Length: 266
Image (tube, rainbow, N blue to C red; front, top):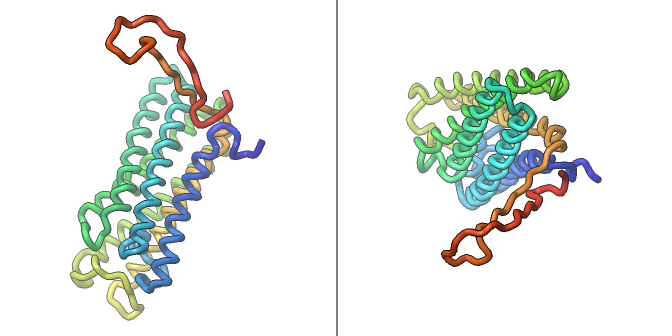
């Protein structure tokens, strides 16, 4: 049995591969069509102009679905491993909410381009990166509370390093983008897709875009740490029938049926 066939380990793998592919394909298309500059454009700029915006939107919408599934499975796994831990249970629920909000933001970023709906796009970016960063922090805290009984200390340290990487990237992006969009470098920056080294704010723009790509990579790395954990879990769906037909009749007891959901393993 291959590693991605064990449990639900294919979920975080598929999430990272699919999302990275969405970024790469959109970037290549935008570069070939000369819609953006090759040197570190904003990720969302590669999905602003047709036809790449169609590809960008469709692929990121599916990525959001994969992300929801991954976050939910992680929630159920922590819940099953710590059935009586109240503090861990609260953190786990908080992580679920933060993760789902981040997925909502990803869908907003995919479907509302910054050149057309700037306010909605920024809200989506804040949800994606802001709530996503908090989700990573909560999961790292859970990893700390669960080691060494549930998993090794190495897992916690790897996730902690990824959270620090994410935090440094987020701070750089927030600081430089705030300065860039403060109004001192012109009012057309929102619509600007091409930058020259002579342009005002070019250095801030490059730092901001580099931090955005760096932050995305930290997200990818964090979800890849789920692969080993997800090899130890599977989900089942239980079907409960309340009658032999679908007419309005008096309920009668029927044997329940359990079938595998997404995995063959028990």
